[in-house]
Image (tube, rainbow, N blue to C red; front, side, top):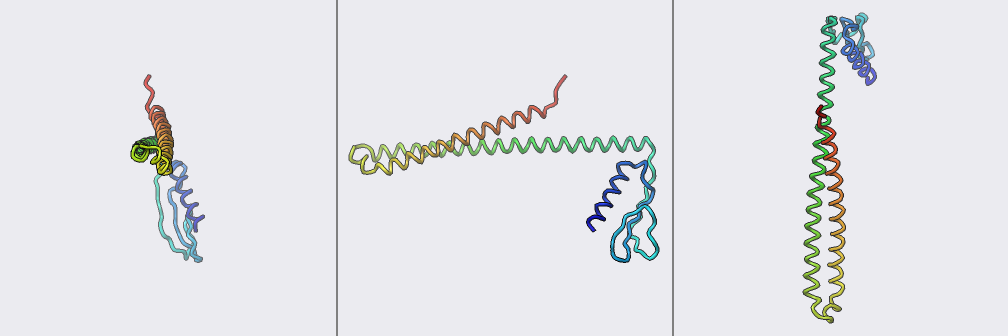
Length: 175
């Protein structure tokens, strides 16, 4: 059934692409075994006819107009795909930029917490010794978040550059 449907689509596509050479009638029918057929010849007696498509042969001018419309549709589809790609690249760059801002803010907040912890628990040598693990933990978190923020900023920079390049390539060149 799937092959038959593919063949039908292929025949119709050929008739659409080469309209001058296409037949004037296409028959869709089902045989006794339940298989669907698509032919340019009338079905044999005793079969169930589903549909008959009649087409008028195109004049050369109509065929040329049809071909130009097809080319315009292809060009429009390509432009829409390019626009969609540009929108996707721009969206990813914006998301990466936002993620980088969030990562930088989190790193700054953690750095402030680490400094606050050091001030609060490190004001004397005995307290520093007593709370050294807590101080170290906060500083390590801050360092880790700063590293993550640097990665996020770098990724945002790369995606922004990709977006700028894509936009520059998409803009038409002016003579």
